[in-house]
Image (cartoon, rainbow, N blue to C red):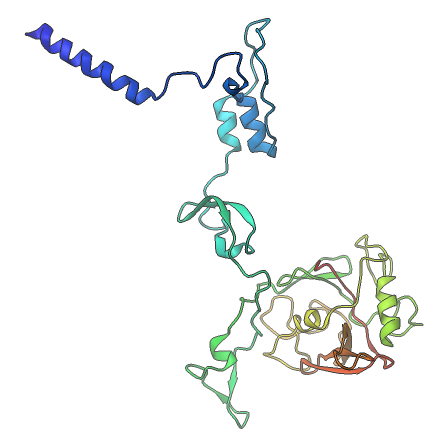
Length: 307
């Protein structure tokens, strides 16, 4: 009886083993390239730098015994990404159509495709509400800008002083000349203002060593901002100027982070449609946009990046 019981157990075990092991047959014969398999080193290189392995195309009789690759499974594991549910991107954080490897185990792990709009509109910065007479009122339920605060949240800090004569806009990624009224721009004869065509040429000629720049920039790196880029600087919680400090929690003051900012009008590179001898400009007094003949003289504020 006991031997019969052991025989049954042995049959059950032997019947289960092939199921657990999977298909034990080789994918192809030894002379067939289809039987080639990547090595541990191939997998390591793929994880480390994206390299595709070069698999053999014919069978080679080994001339010696196997040698160490110098790699272990622990090395392979060390190259694998770790889960990050705090700072890992989700699909709504990544531009639409862009593929990335998600690190979140709460819904975005593995190869993913972003769904975020490529150029979302930011908040205006306005948090206060005013009624029709201009008196401050409670915002809740009004539907005013200060109530809804619609748009992408403004970052904190809002700006970063790069300590090289430039300031980074942490919302747009644009790099602005820290001196908003530099009198050393080429061709401006000691002025901080110029006609439109002169302004275009002057900012294109700007380079490190001028206007307190030590950023290594060269001629051709800088340009006149578009009207949208100029307006992206504005924070409509304040006026005179409509510009925040570096932290983003108060109004601009001298040196925080820009210097020599003027309550004035600044050229954009944008031509007014329908009246192409005019160009758009922005009044930083109130954050309003207008246009004027290109022969007019307005202030010049260089920017770079954004492509």
